Image (cartoon, rainbow, N blue to C red):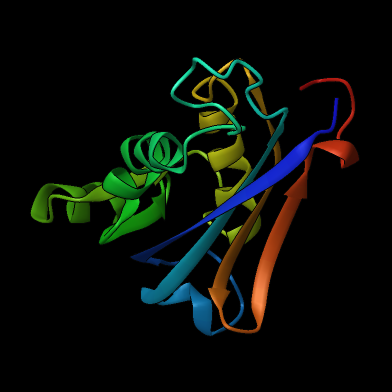
Length: 150
């Protein structure tokens, strides 16, 4: 059976700041994030199945990602929970996510991996994620690069 990779691209706007960072990113600033989600699987072989020939319905994948990530993080301010103004800002503004990690592109990407590991249908495997902060700066995660923890 041939495995196929499918990728769906998502875009969302969010802001963050890097607590204690020695550069401009210590200030609250925003990004137009682009998230590429790639899954692998075998196309459905049952001709009577409405998903015949599909690894996963792109609409189903879109629904999962939107419900798990995009709806939560779009137009959100992402801060480290122990940052000086985190709780004050959270009380003043509604859509603030506080993390126990520094909200770098790399750490946000790993957070998204954790979210998606248990949300995808059993028939597909999360192959990779790519999170771009800008057109020229992004982080990537590949299942094949990981140890057996996943």
